[in-house]
Length: 160
Image 1 (cartoon, one colour):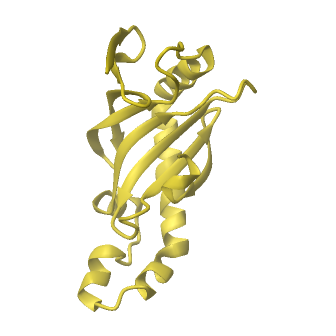
Image 2 (tube, helix red, strand yellow):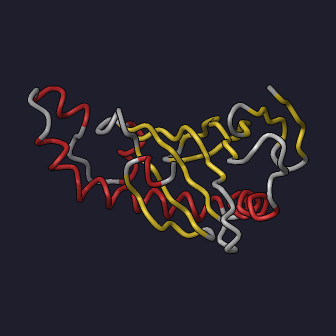
């Protein structure tokens, strides 16, 4: 296990990828989440990955607001399907309740990790946010971000 103090990322530890911590405010709640930076132990974090993190931090309020809006839209589009998968009517209201505002997502979605994804040397800054969610406990929710724009909301595998 290798530990290093990085001027941008803070203290990070290598365990198959670089792992640190950061804070994020989503759905009105400030949370400490994991910071995961893809890469190899004996290679430097690339300038593109550093820029992806810097730009994410600089644009975080806009990115988070857009993420919340798109998660709300995604949830409304898929809620009935998730409700139909539940046989217990009491559980359905906990897992996939009918909601009418973004604020109500705060009890259903919890951000857990920010991923600084691999640099494919194409100039695109790739970041992902992983979230736990009540309606998909096994696969979670992923937010794929490229060049500070949300490109997809779906199961976590879209960013893993």
